[in-house]
Image 1 (tube, one colour):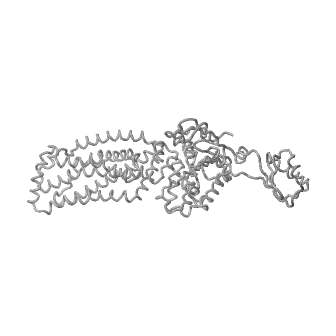
Image 2 (cartoon, rainbow over the protein chains, first blue to last red; image 1 turned 90 degrees about the vertical axis):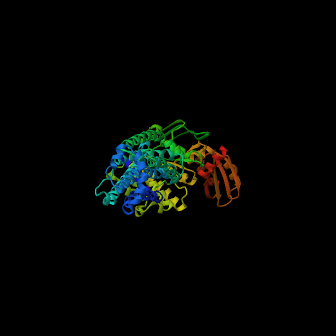
Length: 274
Length: 311
């Protein structure tokens, strides 16, 4: 395995995708909303609106807290009303939204890398290079996975800082991230980045343009939205165990999709699609 | 001499289409070998088969003694390919394009910069090395694509329609570069083209193809001889020769036919070696000869004769 070639392909793809503004526009705006705008909104609001409004709000929240597993419920012990609201919103309700990012980043870069290369008619020259099919595949997968995980982690970091700073007047201490966020960042996020790229590779053989590939791969976001609904309805809360379990399931699906992608990714099928 | 490329009964079938249908040819070191044929003749498919991009449906191919279908990566280490479209990364600079492919071909990091600059200078692109390729003219892109194909000094170069879509000036420039590579560096080249003039100028031998098959193969001279075993010579006299000159010329060994009148004759001979005897004979008869012009067949004559025969 020639890692120098693999890394060269990944770097080249990243250089190229950096110049594709259509790809980067939404990929930059969404993290800004998630990491800065929403936490400020949900942490500052309870501090400025009248307490009775918060109480009315928490009347509804009681129902939700009843559905929470006891281990998570313990986090709310001894907190004031406003603190409970902030912890509930910033610590749980917004959490699944962050899982959109690794999926989105990896599908953006993956679509540009796999389909964009074909769309721009540069694939043929690459196929004539003295590299193996697997090295080409790995180079392109790395090009998508590395920034997807890296940018997701940067967004998490910004979110952690913003939440703690904005809620400091309320809590008087650094309280975030909560325990489930750790497996979410380091177990589930990489799994979702790989899910995004492996699905994109499979889709890429059936579509003609970058935008088509991006739109189809982006439909994976529906999976994440299911988690949002799960939490809002009280069916599924993202506790440590749940996150680890979901992560394991996603890794299993990744293994299957990667196996399918690698077996279908070869020069003969790539040249046939040119 | 061991052939660099050995192709025997090579086949590639796509559904009902036999893109390559039993091709057999060899390419010797230092030779410029042309695959000449219309679009869809199977030229590009042959290039792909010989580089291990496609597996064959039948027959065999050896490039440097290796089977491209099972050893494609090692074959591609020793080949460079100029594809029909330049296939360059337009958002990257010429330097970045070459450096990328130099890395893929295994040029060591320490030698990479020097090699890239050397190729940019050789192809006259050093002044625009840092500019994005999207700002280049078609001719510049083609030169850059040629530089990319040669970045690792491959002993065998494949050129697939190298001047396709270029204006005459740019095409001439690219052809001159290819001729230089062949004459000065002894580069072995397999040229796939439908451009007859280009093939005639550059190729030592050509295989004329249609519908995946080779119709005829050889040098221009060999092909002419195959198609037209006799040679016509146009002779122009200063003055009308004596009346008996025609009759006596017809009796000369190797002369098959004499036509024409007054000062312009057409003489059909068995081969070019007969022409000096014809000239001597006429001079001995007192004829004052102004011009002797053996008719050369161009690749165009050969190509259309073969394609017409195929139809």
